Image 1: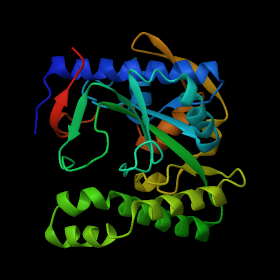
Image 2: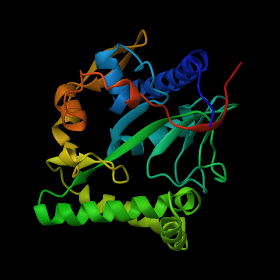
Image 3: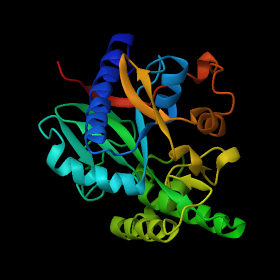
Length: 271
């Protein structure tokens, strides 16, 4: 594992900022709705930029907006610098959400060294889908999401899971081709997105217990500009509702021992 010193961490954040700006440029040009998400949204509200110890960046949009974003990137994305990674553009990709990658860099997560997918510096682009309003259907939907997440992760888990038994389970799941898991995800998304519902979620992301079924769909109705690292990005107008559901009392700093970065075995940034 490589320990990221303060200078390297800041250079990494500035590389991610470059990608955030490219996503924002395309979204504004084509009137695509998005918001900063997760720790990046929290950083915008609490710090006016990156959380000081954060090593990644997140954006979120509804699936209908992502479909438009994907099409816009085909003709608008600066492909010399950036690569939009999802199931269609990287046939070895195993994650249920998309990433924007910075060409000419390396960001190799510990435990994923064997992966064949593009592993350059990235920002996450989470795509949200509707969640059934019916309580029983919500439970079924949650279980299906769990299965898809584990099935896609099996390529990593079969080698890096904590113990031998779990690795064996992942090895069995990994016998199911990636594209079957992808088709299942797309089928569920097509069914749930037929109507607007109370909750939305990213299907392959595990939320804390308080919001395990999803987050309020009303947050995706209105957006405002918010300064982040000296630039304006879009965030939810109801960011307080979103962050409270996601984190609880989000303005309280976590204790020092929980201010962790992701373990990395290799990193290479643009000089």
